[in-house]
Image 1 (tube, helix red, strand yellow):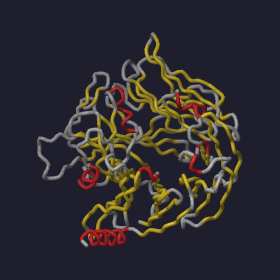
Image 2 (cartoon, one colour; image 1 turned 90 degrees about the vertical axis):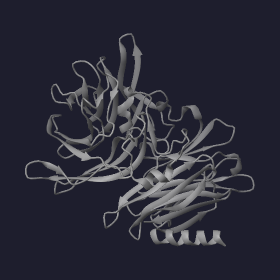
Image 3 (tube, helix red, strand yellow; image 1 turned 180 degrees about the vertical axis):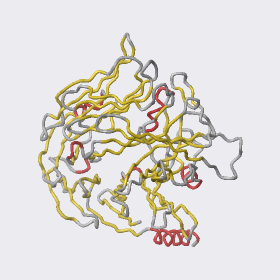
Image 4 (cartoon, one colour; image 1 turned 135 degrees about the vertical axis):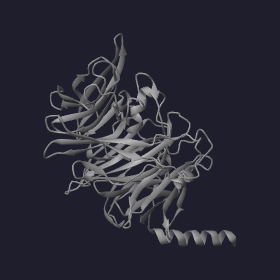
Length: 496
């Protein structure tokens, strides 16, 4: 009876925070993909001998608006591996593979849900092979940009390569277009963050020599020639500008760039020095670069760090900030969202601990940041706390200070924050997730105020074998999908 009461109270609490709608499909190997503002649910319809591939297009109310049926060959649904998909080159690509076979069939749909190709018998080794031998890959329409590095007698050489898609109706293979070789001396890393028909922009870190500092390189997308290099550091300045986020004004062709800034005393990559323990504040920079690649505005903002009063003074806290959004409204007010990560052991492994919104407005003479702080969220930390050193939930790490800048833009293997927003009263709300290796399951939890007191509320705990999928469909809606049994696929949409 106690167990029943517990789940009754839990369901009542959840219903006060979220409302759910359920939709079920008679699919085996089911899966879900968001594409071009629509939701697509697909899987195999089992028959006595032969399976049929089926895909439905759904709107935000989970109503079926269109569908396509395609024979899946001579095998039954049980003989297929889990079906997967992606949206490379602005197409919906569905991948079907039979067990113990190395051949894949791809069904490709355009943005209007028109089947443009069914490509059979592709060797699994040829699928998206361009990503197998490059350091970083960036897709723009039917073009692919990659950064490749290789070591030779003179040191590490970096190249920016451009490839062009050969055919939209065949397996994605590419023709080499051009190569831009970076200067050979002292480049530590290069990160592609923007591309258009005219240009490709990269954040480049040079850690030694006369050009030491952080740069934005503008490379001509047609010719592969360097248009302009813009140094973020002033002359003689030894501070470090980590990459955060950007806002491109396509009309004026200006670039707004932001990220965390480290002083010379805090970080010297060439000297393998990082000293940010218990810093009283974090620095965030805001730099505006015009259409001629000249810095026209540059300003720093101090955000104080705070810890709960119960924290011992002996505890070490090192904070870094990953800026996940940057917006500017018509009044000129700038807002950015930041994920706050910290460690308490001076390692190069940081864990997600909070998300905050920050606002920059015009003051009397300069821009000013509205009152704000950097702090951990105890409930976020409680949610995924583990003593297992192999538990990677919410963790980001690099192997050395040589790769420190990658902490600010590399992806997390097991992200904790799946969705975040503020409500009408400016209260932050989270959808959190963690992978439980012992249970072999994925936990989805809602963090929100209940009667003005923040609480963690379980939404779903789904076995990993059920292939759970989380999709954020906008500011008020998300979906959790899973295979509930061998022949039934379920979608739950939640309004929050």
